[in-house]
Length: 73
Image (cartoon, rainbow, N blue to C red):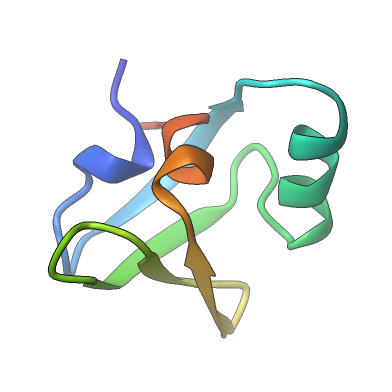
């Protein structure tokens, strides 16, 4: 399973599935990340946390834990 953390900087990938449940999954979906959404990885901090992505025309920073629940193409 490829997660958002596995996508290299400068690459675009599509969300296949959002793992997780409850409030965490709802929060991710409220940010505009849903199944089929394309994410462009802009930057990754030196220690890998956070990851900055472009989604639906805006920049969003995600923690490593949040990136791990996003299964990518």
